[in-house]
Image 1 (cartoon, rainbow, N blue to C red):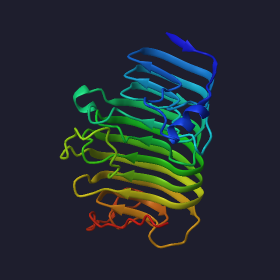
Image 2: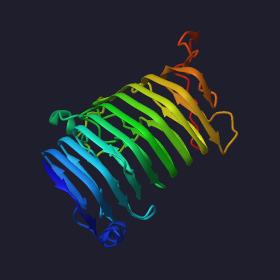
Image 3: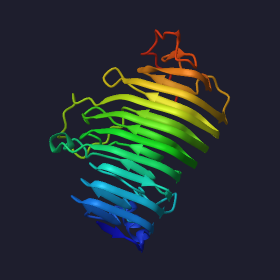
Length: 310
């Protein structure tokens, strides 16, 4: 079993500056990258100012990341994701603090080439984290998810002073799937958008992708979502080609900064709300009482109520 027990710092500022000035003829490297490995424990380490992604396990199995601190400036530190599990399985990320210039965590399984590579990210547990991302999101799935992402649990997560809290992002041409995703005990503190599912994140490495490769998004649940200072609690933007299916909300109460009507935003979403949820959910979702008895069946799953102006 391999262990890393050190503090690693790198002068990322030089790389960020050259990247912004378009002076690089090559890609920036991650601070730590572990590939095709198993039985990895990374603990009690501080990683700081990576040129690119900070900690990138690729095609690894049985990985534990515990008590890790990852830091980068929250602005002008491009692509400094904290932890990017990429085509990994049987993984635990716990008891970490991450404040960076991009996604704190981004679960991936490669871009369109991941379809043929066939290595999904699965069986991943993320718990007891405090994260911050002023530019992107606290915990993301995608947008590189063509190999598939499944059986992910995110629990006991605090996202503070961030642009987005949790996000799933994909697009036509990605293919693959995101399914069996559980979010539990989430706290948002001063977050612009709480929950995001975006199906038009059209970034591809080249034009060699199948325009008809539509990803599947299904079986996603949110239980115990609370917080304050949130502008838009939910924005689930499905489409006719990529509907979002079997989404469940339960035990949600989020304090708002805007009192506008349409702040629980949906499009092409199929799912349900169990019990009381605040703010009032979109009309796309079926309503159930606390005993999970059907109260009202939605007839408006394809209704579009997305507003990016606030």
